[in-house]
Amino acid sequence: MKTVTKRDLVVQISNETGMTQQQVFDVIQKTLDTITKTLSGGDEVVLRNFGSFQVRETKQKIGRNPNKPDTDVIIPPRAIVKFKPGKEMKERVANVLHQIQNQETTEATPPPAATTPTPETGSL
Image (cartoon, rainbow, N blue to C red; front, side, top):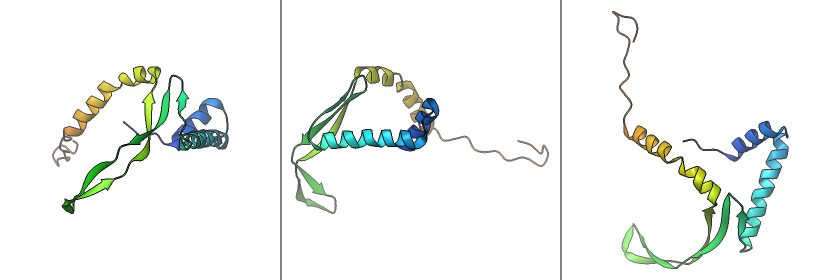
């Protein structure tokens, strides 16, 4: 599976809509800025059929320093962003499971050894 970047989204949307890449970039960036500003204000962002972004608080917990395992380190509570997918996204993403499983088995299996041409045949 590949990673899609903001740049990839801009190019794809620009190609599909006929808008310039700069126009598409401005709209995407303004959307992300608005979502960030809304969340930083403690509010929730709901995009129907896509999902919702919510600010949640993590509880204080005790951690360990790997270099000093006998010393406890208090990790303070903090605000995090939680994404909850919408119904339509859940249904569409559920179909990806077999691709993920196939990718994991492909990565676990080493590729076959490369063969070199032999002088007798001159080919693989």
